[in-house]
Length: 123
Image (cartoon, rainbow, N blue to C red; front, side, top):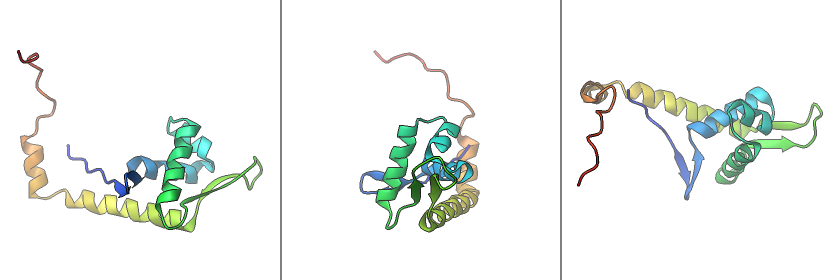
């Protein structure tokens, strides 16, 4: 199986990748960083750190937060966040479609379905 993983770097930090895109989707679906993190099986701290990295790596923040548990509380994607997420998902789709040519077919043909059993450690 061929899987293309796109990571966009900002210096040494990953500004956007599959996990961060999934987190943005979860923030849209759940309306908060903590609920999005729970939905993805990650701690609030981990989710918050990922959002913080994204917000520091783009020309404008991707996520904005509001304190409190009221209707206005929680987190939401900014316009820039929606644009970046949409462009990233479109890039994933286009590269996935492009990975169907002769090279991809050759690689899938010669790659085993499972690795061979290890023969032990060399002497």
